[in-house]
Image (cartoon, rainbow, N blue to C red):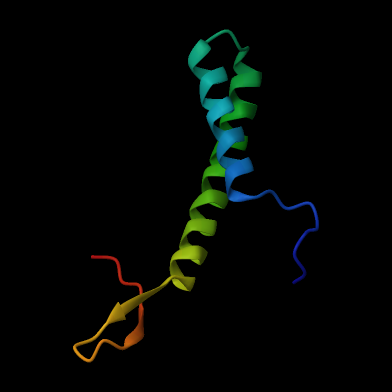
Amino acid sequence: MAEEKDEKTFEQSLNELEKIATDLERGDLSLEEAIEKFENGMKLSKECSEKLDKAEKRINILVQNEDGDLKEEKFEVE
């Protein structure tokens, strides 16, 4: 499946999600507007989570062993 050319970056999605949260917290939206923003926020939240998971899988940590050599180790969440 090809990636969309206009796919948002993680930062763009996060900024949009923060704006949605601010809009919802103000409390001056109609019920329909609030539901629509909430649905969009949930979608953005899922996209951000997927991007973080994908990035986490790509992270490698360089560690120096006893001989002073650097070796790659996979990133592991504790």
